[in-house]
Image (cartoon, rainbow, N blue to C red; front, side, top):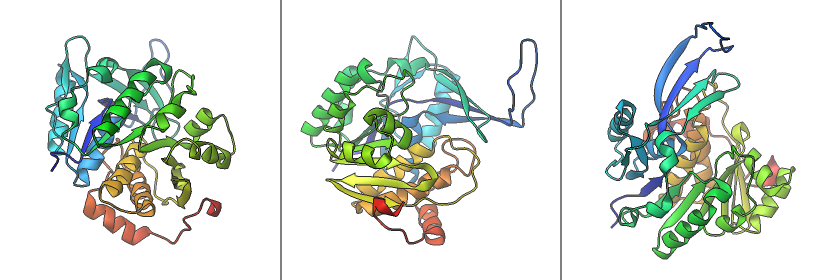
Length: 318
């Protein structure tokens, strides 16, 4: 028996969500906004909180500053039932902060990486990793750390653990073609529609899917409100999304990932994993902050029962 369902490795920071900021102040000016709220942020952190809320045993492996924000994150993790004993405290940097401006419309961010910049898989305590049955990774930065991610994925596979990875947005614009090598080593590979088009250099999404199918045994493509596609061993399945009022899309992709991995670790078929994922992603955008709207298991089942519609499992249905 493993101590944890999932070990999560990656970024964690503070999200300061600024609501109702329609313009940035000029020099010497002040702008009043509707509200400002403080939340736990970072893709790995939001994934962890969503997965723990669904009843999975989760441990987090990352870095926080030794400041008040770092303690705030630890406290929120503990309240969520997440084991924080593997989190390192930085002596060099404060906890990362991301300011999300006007999330109701076109989100803009001001970000300080802080202690997240210290994440290094080569320094990871493998004794912590083997306590889980699944490992979820974030923090991939193309050619900068590609080699260490490939090596880690191979180590985890050799230890008998399943793995998942969300590449995230490449702020450098490199869109490293070598990511194909990593796809072959990771059990479940997450991307959104824009990311996959950049990486495959193909605009029609059908062509992107065919290209990824040549390299990844199991990848999941997030299509926002349109739903999602999963291709497993060359078989592609599609499920439509849910229509919900949009309040804040921060963390929707991470909640989606958690729903999918929850289904995967529960032994559900791919189409059910997609249903859980779409529901978790939809519910997360109905409240401000990346974790406030994520459901527990009971709320997830109720939402699906109230909202699910028949959809084809085939890509051609889009």
